[in-house]
Length: 112
Image (cartoon, rainbow, N blue to C red; front, side, top):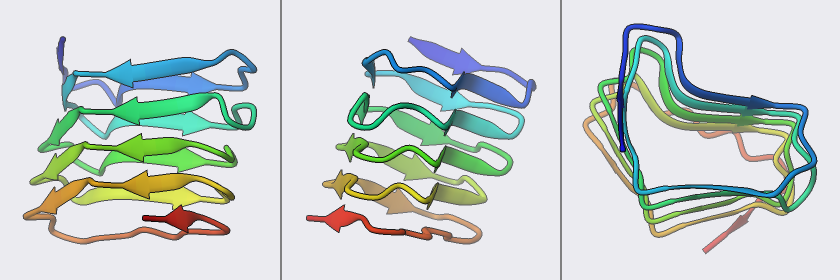
């Protein structure tokens, strides 16, 4: 699935306790490809997506522990991947290319 829009968010998920997987998508948006905020521990998986040319950040995750972010490609975004207070998260096997800036604030992550 491709999400190409001038809107601020391709996908916005906040305040849920439900398990979800975002997989196999292409994001090119006005601000954030995906913005995830304040979701329950160990409910988030973001795998095998492409984030291209998002004006601010390809993937932003805040206050959401235990996330799995794997096999994604971040290219030509301002920031590729941005996390904040995402303890015990796994961020592995991602590709980050041609970012104007790179911001990954990892609070209590597990990197592989």
